[in-house]
Length: 428
Length: 156
View 1: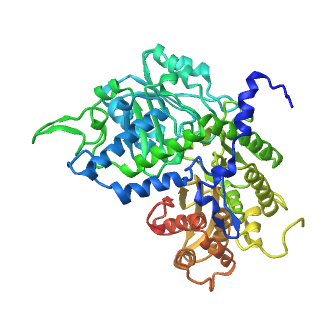
View 2 (view 1 turned 90 degrees about the vertical axis):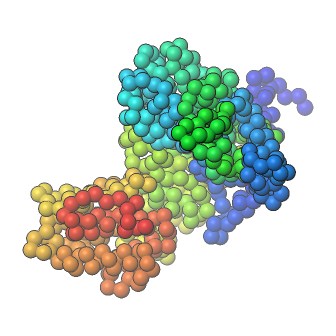
View 3 (view 1 turned 45 degrees about the vertical axis):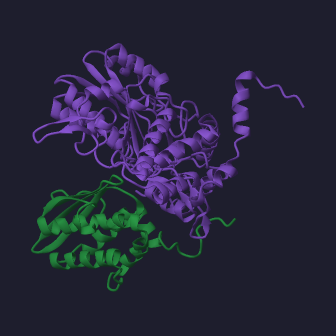
């Protein structure tokens, strides 16, 4: 009965062993869907996650029982909705181990990053200041900085990649020096799956007097993330990738930075006193939440945080790591070219691949006929595609409800792709 | 498990589409060309470059280049074969009839081999792949040069 397990491995083994994926799947109604006559195999969670019934119920209950506008009116429903919204702020802040005064609800992570680029970089940086980005950024963590750089006369510089698809830390160290004032970097690449060393980058940035803004869309849903431990200044993620409703994004910023930054959007809720010619601003974080917020989405995201922490993101992460190891094996057997780290070390559950001359769109269309949903395209990372020398990739991504059988279904589907498109050679 | 192609033809990847994908006709770059048009799909990054020589109101020569999926390449190949030698007016009419099949559910009468692409019309996200080279052609016939993307008027 006694099996000797080295102490280091013990935690991981038990995390994987007691993860009941079938119980998890029972919480996600959409996973019962058929695509044609096949069961849905959803391998596109990096684009958006599916929603558990706990989140769906929370949203429905809000609209059925407590719907009202927030921060105004003195009636019971107004109080309830306001309380739910502010509780959601505290809950979501706790989810990333952050001070809730720095937590701003936005429409999506794109808006969160635009907020920082507009209100911090464009307004508080000076001509000649440098913003450092990387070659693996999503357009949402690239284009806003281009806009800010254009308007404020800032310089942009880019950290390149190693052959394995990791950040070239020598270039990072060289660029994180005077006159760099801000580093904007993705935590986990949505294309390569690479997990970047955020704490190390934060230390380098801070050592040269720069701030660090992190796009955490692909990390927060999948692993424990602490803004305190990472020591970051800004962190953005989208609720819909973390089992929350669509239309809910999050920006966390150090409250003292939010206090220095001018407003992003103007309107109701973000003001203190309005006169005809000028106004004063509400306290942070309300200063950055103009207009009626998506209360249901915030409340739903709080329910998603409860749900994910109820299972435990360490366990979810361990489950996904096992899936990624399996996925990499299946892709290896299918003889496709994996873009990004080939081993499940500092690598998340989004895996991009190409199949020679067979276009990713064709891969996705044929897989879809077997009920297998993957993403195909440039993944909003056109500069990275150029760096990889491809126009598009296929991408499979896993989450807490993904099974090993689904990974095998992808492998079988890829054989079908070859059967249809490969029998008499590739195109000229 | 049976090996090799199934005896029933695949409703999307019809043999004629696969043939044009594997052996594209009129692939390349005309030099010199009277008309050069780029087509671009910003959703997937696919590109088509059309070059044409138009003489005395007719398409004297046409070629396509670029990169894309099997559907977009086969569509471009079949299109170039189909409009070669047509008058500008007839070529524009063919574009209209092809787009009517893809976008409005019109029949494939008188479209010849292009009928093979009708299966694509059932997959909304792939229609743009098939129509991209045709929009580039229409732009070239009407304006003589330019750039089209799948996110402009004709598809919306």
